[in-house]
Length: 323
Image 1 (cartoon, rainbow, N blue to C red):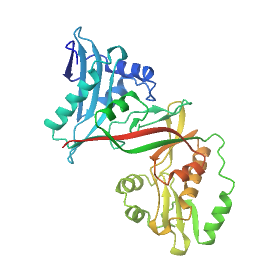
Image 2 (image 1 turned 30 degrees about the horizontal axis):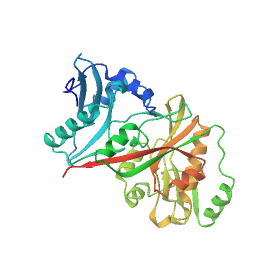
Image 3 (image 1 turned 30 degrees about the vertical axis):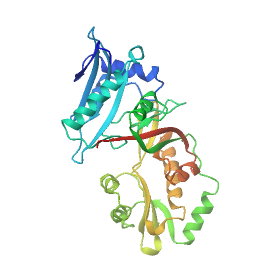
Image 4 (image 1 turned 120 degrees about the vertical axis):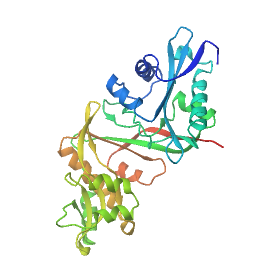
């Protein structure tokens, strides 16, 4: 890096202005942020901020990361340099210093770019004015992703974001036939009622997802779509929810926490029917769109595609392991 730039630890200058500017110059999907939201995301406790400053005292780029957890995992949230200051190693210098600090001072064993990062960057779905609350990785086609790959970061997974308009949503034509077939086998798609159904908490143990369990059981006052086995006295064997609507971008997003089927009942199309019922519910209760993401190789993609969702963005999950 040329001598006219130096890396400073801490926030210096108008970082929000740089961020919002780079969204447009790099054709990124991130939503421009107001000051309060920017500060909340980038300056929460447990973060690391580095700035690249030129000889005139102007900040020309910055990096934001999360300090490592107890397991030694740190998260890279964002880095960028203004276009007119690129090509001289400035971005690499930011990364070099971040990696040195995270590894040397805080004992990080690796740096991840993944949805587990508590700093969530909201983005706008391409071709729309609708938004999603968090980017589950880094845009695979972005300049930053290409630089990281050249530096030895490995893509260990990829996420596909799905989107569907819910304006006048109609379930697929063969939905009734599928529902009837399940009902013949005693399985019914309905809404959770603790007076009639049992086994919701145990379902999360069976699918091994304590995070979903905590969230769902804390919001039993909201609708939860379930599949129940009536031959087992209303045993809950599949779910999605809790269902709520929230403004994201210019639209109202149908919100939910996960979707899952008990291992003993998989392979019958239950998750597909649950998901379609959720879309219908959201459409009838004010949501204008649905958005979600899942692993590129996750068979669950077929569920979303059957319900009318389309893949809109590929996100890379990158990782740098320290030897």
